[in-house]
Image 1 (cartoon, rainbow, N blue to C red):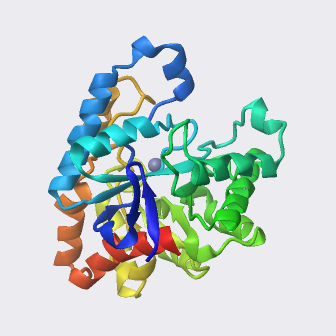
Image 2 (image 1 turned 60 degrees about the vertical axis):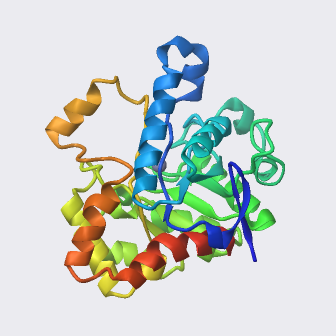
Amino acid sequence: MSTVQTVKGPVEAEELGVVLIHEHLRFRDEAVAAEWPDRYDEQAELDAALQAVDAAGSRGVQTIVDPTAMFGGRDVRFMARVSEQTGVRVVACTGIYSYDYLPHYFENRDVDVMAEHFVADLQSGVQGTDIKAAFLKCAADAAGVTEHVEKIHRAVARASVQTGAPIMAHSMPAVETGPRQVEIFAQEGVDLARVQIAHCGDTDDVSYIEGLIDRGVYVGLDRYGLEMFLPIDKRNATAAELLRRGHAERMMISQDYCATIDWFPPEAEQVFESQGAIRNWSMTLVFDEVIPALRDQGVLDDQAFHTIFVENPKRWLTA
Ligand SMILES: [Zn+2]
């Protein structure tokens, strides 16, 4: 029986239960937060995380996979507090969330040294704790797979090959980063069955998504509520078509919700909501709207639900 590392220690994979595969307990720039801590309200951040995770728990979620990496303000102690107080398991990652920028520290060290940092997080513990990361994270966005982004992808890939840890890669379907990301992982010898290409659900181009599935990777339909990328009904139509084509075993559904995020001033959330850029974005939207809609369309039965929310996360996390 294989185990999975959570922020409260290892658990049997069978115990993970219903999993939300892509949610952030908090998202902020660690450099800004370190330099100007008085601009952040830690208690409010904790309260928001507790509220979001409790709400998810009330819908039956037993485990949340939180892909907050470097530059997202990863903080495994914060995650452990939220997990402790809510009783919901939290799975943490290692890696670098950058669309291009790399600190000089990593710019002037090679790929294998970068990989060593990730391996240490997976095998020894994160941020001076004995909390181990369970998976690897990297990102490619509008700028595409730049030199720095490629370096991060190769380091993540080598750490995966060395440790067997799975990979989650933020992608941008609008500029079709996915195939190139998969190609890099394949070149490095990664088992593509351990790779998840996040944010595929930002497009309704089913053949693009199917092209990735054909490589053997998981696809994340994981940004429900972020209407600025694709509205919920189009996301559902894409999910329904993938289910009809028999791809349940490669689909991950989530919201990429951030209980708090410092990218915009606090008043922006209401503006986004009123302008329709986000709609009902939360850690429960999938349960409140998406699953009922897919059930109504006759494409999601109990078996498919179990595949997507229980079996796929477990299989991805454990090989
Ligand atoms: Zn995310």
